[in-house]
Length: 312
Image 1 (cartoon, rainbow, N blue to C red):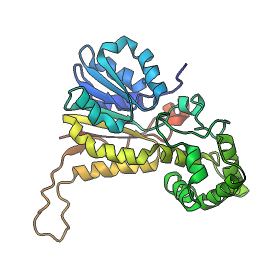
Image 2 (cartoon, rainbow, N blue to C red):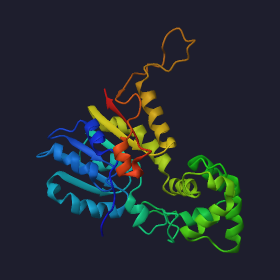
Image 3 (cartoon, rainbow, N blue to C red):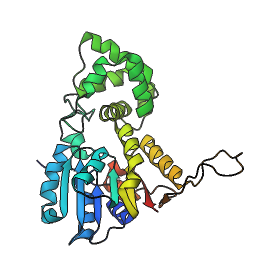
């Protein structure tokens, strides 16, 4: 099966990692392997790439795409939150760089058959890892109206979250909502016509994004992983994150800002008693973004923000 995906900001991300021959790097979101292939080209002949992805289709694709580098790779089908256990399994204490690309692939949108797209009539699944439990239809058909509205508001920043949640609860009483097309139609019907006409994006975009984030617990896993990431890096090691919406970028930005601080005592304290030390150096005071040329060639990259830091 062809895994269709265009990697966002490949050159910028790999350059930020400072890849060199013989070093160890972890690409924790393999996707279409655009980043992974560039990393491998820079670390051969004796470097190691640890490739991780929670989507089994991405792992199958990586085995084919990265076959010329098979002696330099170790592949793992799991979420990036399990990188500490992976390193323990490989008897590796720290790595020289970690890459996180938090976007979902064109393959998942168009070819996975899991209901990520509001333009298709597919089962309402939305799991990145098909071996995990909760599906999108479980949330849509069982969550209370208040909970649904909170998901749409918090994760999707959807203005009409309450109206949409109310409409979903009304429709699911008539018949369970099991397909992406039916959910898309319900969302569109809940939004006022005037508001729909004024939007540049499809009316169901924010709701579908919010449900995907909730199903895969994307923000919780990102926050948890970042808390352990610094200790997984060797001194001088780097972490590069590509985020695709404001909630992800905010988490990354706040973590880096906290790690760069040397003292977190209240201003009124005459002397520091927290003993907190600066442990990273930000490499991106402002996030890097794709060039207009890249956005023209790959519209899915338009919202990408790249942030990186180096461990001191």
